[in-house]
Image 1: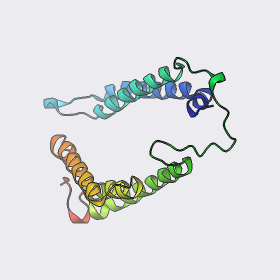
Image 2 (image 1 turned 180 degrees about the vertical axis):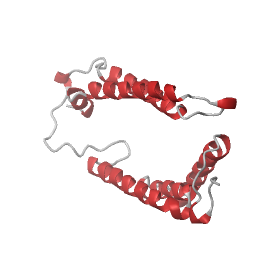
Image 3 (image 1 turned 60 degrees about the vertical axis):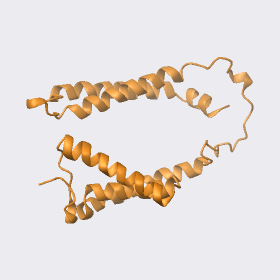
Image 4 (image 1 turned 90 degrees about the vertical axis):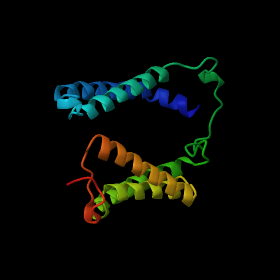
Length: 179
């Protein structure tokens, strides 16, 4: 039995349908706050509408697709798996155990980056987070990781700091857009 078949049997379509409904609820709630305010500026409801709408769209699509069995695939044609087949290797060569460990590492790194925001500022903490995840978790080269981190920080600064004029905390270094 493949991982896809196991997910279908465990209520995957239902879970994604519930997430799609939550996305719709977030989008509807965001509309009451106003998507845009005076002079065409982004309002407080913009992010809930966009994020909720995308969540509803993507999760709804996955819910529909997860209930559809691909042509030619049946449960009878599935080879039997060993009882300890939970260490499936993905396309990047990582076992299930490595993927779970990486997920917890990203959570811990994100928490550390949040704590660093007050010291080094959001942009530096976020760029550091991207750099560490890129080198340590994704095993990219140092040069490529530095380039990815710098481009990501520049994009965040451009979109949120300059375009949307969202104050980004500068921390003790003062490298943000607040104030």
